[in-house]
Image (cartoon, rainbow, N blue to C red; front, side):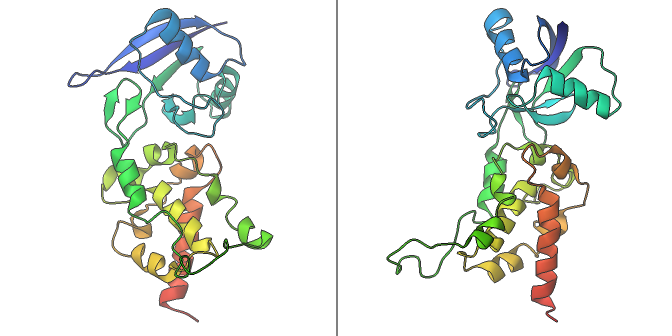
Length: 245
């Protein structure tokens, strides 16, 4: 089966263009395998990121027909199935673009500096008052750990950030990835900064009130973290903190 790939191409300080490549593929061929073949067999100048090939590093995230996916996780068959489910025409032609809300370095490679800066702004690690005094590790019960199951699945691929309408309109908004990480720490029984975190993320439009509820982060997340759901849960915790019953 022949599939055509319209791939976004951009060099530094030049206008973007699209270049078309055709491959003979099977339904179980991954999108990353297709990009590899294009680079190895047709055009060695094509730039894209990849690493683990097992959907755990997040580095190969790209937009396929305007929706973010992990290139190593999706196959031609799953993308065709998604096209059918979303009532899109399937003419055996796919458009591959870099993630949104981030500047392009080259082709499918984006500059994620702001993504990491926004994550760092939420202090994305456990803060424990007695950590230095303790002579043993801080244990959690199975029930306490279960609270983190969903948010701990985040692989920081940038898919939610790419599709975030609020981030596109407000550069000061820290983004769904950062707020999902913040809520993961708020739920963590080992963290002692819960109230401080809730107060921080309730200020202005940088935190939870910057989210406009478009739900695209939930739709785009390949790991089922559902960032907007975590943002809504954080809002409830903020209301409880500011106006306890």
